[in-house]
Length: 436
Image (cartoon, rainbow, N blue to C red; front, side, top):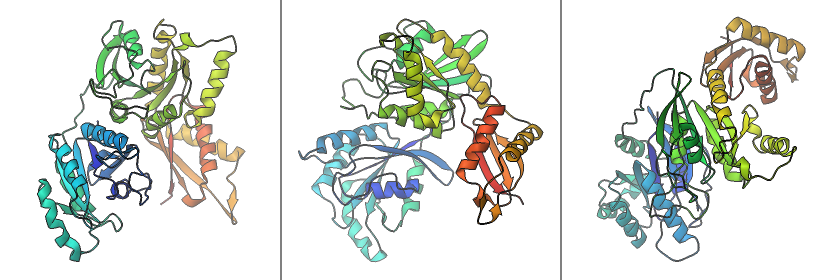
């Protein structure tokens, strides 16, 4: 189910990143008391009570001509366009400024729900400073304090009232939904068309041609699929990015709705840092993952090139060591036919269940071969393990003291499980709990 999107916007230095970090619950955005320090949109997932949502931190909107301000303004406008609900952040200590009024004029045009937040109201005596903010025309302002975490509950309650209904289309239990994600112009739409055998998705050398995620139902050898193309990151007639730090929100929505995610890499350009960031979203979401180096026809190669590229991909995507790697050319159609069998296999692995008796035999054998190390005279003891979920396969291991489970030993157990069962293409999760 796709999550609603909440964007925090406002002029520079009003505390957007601090509030973002408070909501997300970790220090994701850089916080520095210098206007304009947040130059790119930053994305994360968050939850409030029963609501899960994606949240965007933006650089401050400013109409000046100082370095980066035009780019920051464009970034914020993109975030506004992508969001379902907008938190308009202001600074209570400074009152309503001309820049606040300029931001308000931008927000008037969005026709989207706007919740006005007045930050840096650190104690009740300061609330009289809020009254001027009614002049911005967004109803009751919400007093908050990023430094002390005050008022965020009321703010999020109000924002959540405006979240849209995000019910997903129910395609049925046996339908495999897979998405294609990657940087602009890596060939995602061309691969979709290669699957479908027609020009259903617009293909262009201009990065970001496709605007919205497009669902394409497809049947092959009696197996039903839904292909989710998340290629588009720019609006027609509006320059979304001058760099490849493009909007990933549609990719995130596509990932959330998918069983399997194909991370597409441009073989002609090679691996870039953004490729790893995009792949990280699929890994963190617990989806089945396949790494696809497309445009293989454009790569100058000899008999060693594929092995060399495979090694390079493994070195750059160490967190996806479980993901199969394929080399394709959407232009020539080469090896595109190999994708569906791998997608089927990854889908099955992602939904696999292991009997508890067999799982415990594997765990017991692993412990016998490599006993857990001691910590200050205490040794981890594993009593029992069971699978509690699929998509991704999730295992609970009951032990004497969970704090004795070092991440390296957890990794060892994961590898033994992978060696025994066919979990290619899917992350697996291990949860350690004390035996009751």
